[in-house]
Length: 630
Image 1 (tube, rainbow, N blue to C red):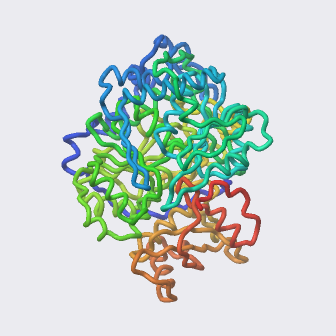
Image 2: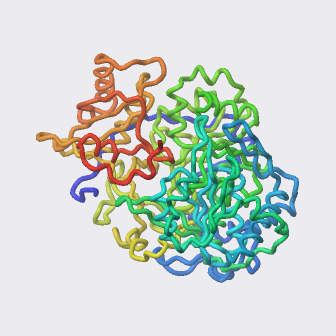
């Protein structure tokens, strides 16, 4: 944890300020981020009240907010069902409009309209209801990024049941733990997913996860890889839905009734079941997606996340559908069957707005800028990145090589617990590539030391949020004390668990988790700064940095480097990289060691697992690796 006696040295600064491309003004909804946010901060309750008018309410709320930061109640007397905004309202506007264009790396494609999606969701909801699922029941969903996975989510919401999507790639132990914690009696799963040209067996994971687990009375299997014999409590997805009506009224619930549980790993490795409610969550994610991206129903929008993560929930499902967007989804690896697969989708489908992760940006950067010249990317207007810090070199690659200096490239920061975008840049903003951005709308950030005191401008500390917001999580499922920990670490604020700084101009820089801070000869240095410096070298594609015990410095820096295409490991290159960091950040941040690797260990959401690198280096137990990408 952060040392209360010292601040973090924020070393990375480029001084770069890049104005928005000239063409952005023609389509951006908000011309001035500073003015938009300043207006919102004058009356946050009024701001969020206006956002609530985007939502279809069965009974409009008379009260916008009551309570405190740690006991927040948004639209508490309102009644609704999230699927009415996402489906019924959209069908009334235009049933034939495209909801999803779904691509699988095996070559198959499907398009589903809003009218077809509503009918499919109703059939699934009716089948679940006939099988005994009702309001408040928990249903776990272990499905890949498919239309059926989205239908399963919406069908649960239609009934007022609580869905919990578990990423289709986690192992049986992780799946079982989440089923047990949620108290789910029904599991909806697929038998296979497709990745890197292979059909990945999910059925065996499901079988192992529910073996001897009597609380699970029903397992519904979407059999994509061929029909097989089913156990007593198992049902085939198609047969289960057969004969169900495609008409069903949505169950009206309180704004504060839970919509879903989404598990996220904490620093202890024990998953936390983050709870989101129908009213505040839907209001916030619909508004923030539309306002921070300027997406409209005329766009072809592609978010490269998965439904197993909060980005998938907010930006692929609920936020996207609530706004009536035309959405592209793609199941499989982004660099399969070749490194140009991502570019090929953009070109062929005319994608206008891309929402992705810094991991994908760095993967494309490793493949080199020349590859972008083989594709017509002229449809692109904006690229948005979230998930972990977007280092300046990756930003510049997206801006110059992919966007050809005419596409807005905007960094965003948010978490599972925050539900939607919280800070970053709007498309019309001048970009500081070495800064994360500024708070969106009325969101109130600060940077404090461990004792709750503000740190000097430019120094690092703990990122906190001072005021409530609608998409904030409503709790940790079954663990009130763990929920309150977020607000008790520093009383009176929400502690995000990230290290950040605020400069004299008010720009925030989020440099990573508080656990990813090195103590080198009394200097506290973020791993993100050193990694960004390494990636700024023309040979370095990706870098992961850890601290090793050192008898003199306390910790010494070791870097693991994956090289870009066209470069080979050598002692000369190792020395050159160390010298580069020394020049870029100063001598204190220069790595003592560099190891060349073919790839870095990452979670399935694309984040580098520095904990795993550190454990492997020390020869200690690597701990829970259920989120590790294969």
